Amino acid sequence: MLEDSELTNAGRGSCLSRDGSVQCDAGVMLDSRGLFAGVGALPGLVRRPVLVARCLLESQLQSPLLPGGLIPPSLLVGHGALDWARANCRDCDVGFVESDNALVTPAARTAYLKYSRLLEAAEQQQQQQRLGPRKRRAESPDSSPSGESTASTAAVERQLGNGGHRCWLTPAAGGGPVSDTVGAVCLDSSGRIAVACSSGGVALKQPGRVGQAAIFGCGCWAESVGDAGVEDDDGGSTGVGCVTSGAGEYLVRCQLAQTCARAALRRSPRRASPAVVSNGDCGGSESSGSDIDAHRQDDLASVAGDCLRREFLGHAFMEGVELRDAGLLLIRRRRQDPNLPLQQLEFLYGHTTEAMCVGWQIVGEGDGEGECEAVVSRQATITDQSHRDIVCISGSVYRL
Image (cartoon, rainbow, N blue to C red):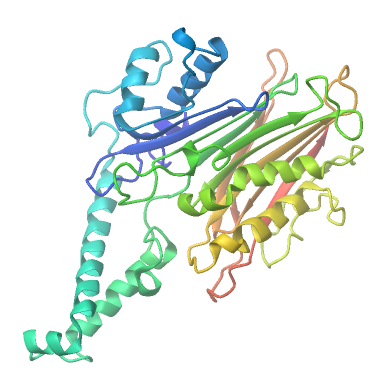
């Protein structure tokens, strides 16, 4: 699982909190009945937080009501989530560990120490600014605005970004561990969709902080119309699944996963498009990288591009936000007749960041191995930080 890999910011290898601990978020959702479960700020004593979320969702499926008419929880956080997992997930292979340091990797520890020093320098700089120039000169008569103190401050600003407002896990900080959520979207042969996401959160986060991965409608979303006796506008059925990655606090503001998935449902094509496989060119500020019927308003590339631009980059709640990093995976499946197999599957990924890692697999029938591929999607190099509307879109359409 991706949570077991040190290369991802989920489970083992997660970014460390201010107190040096691992705390993880995860969420799981099915396309039927809006069933969702999430765990937030889960202490680093569980290797696979997403399986705790799955176990929590399965408990909702098994018992709509608990004894006494209590409603089963859909979101648990902190030590309450850990206690529930210990009591209910013994058979779920969630990977309990005994030590708080079991999920801390050498790379994560090195990054933690580096960014802690940078944060301490930034806090000292902020304190000096509050004191005012006269008091600083009185306390350090040999210093001057053009001296060593100013040079040190400038170095900190370069490391932390513009005025210290940028997250330091960015190219502006000279690199560092990955800061992206791990997400997965799955479609089975019956057309059912499940989505999941898991994250170790941002570096030096406040202990107890919960990101978008654990929050309903923000980290993942799955929904279908036409499969429960209610047909869609064209008499068939359509299902969508979406997971998001990026700056969690801002993805929560925009509820990007739900917004994008619902837009894909509303603008679902009324007939199957020709089979197309696209390898997007992610340079430039338009969604022209995708060949998926680019001039149709209901194609998935247009949907994702519009959502990233209007519902994230251009959202009213994003005013004054400098770090507008987001990525998403999105699928849409289409079945004209509920009694027939799936006819079309659209798969797409998009991001506003410099790069995004994506992989997919089509499992073969019987003993077949199917297809498997992984890519690193990259944008053209952005030298002017004012160009914050650049979006990379790419994907494929499969005629089934």
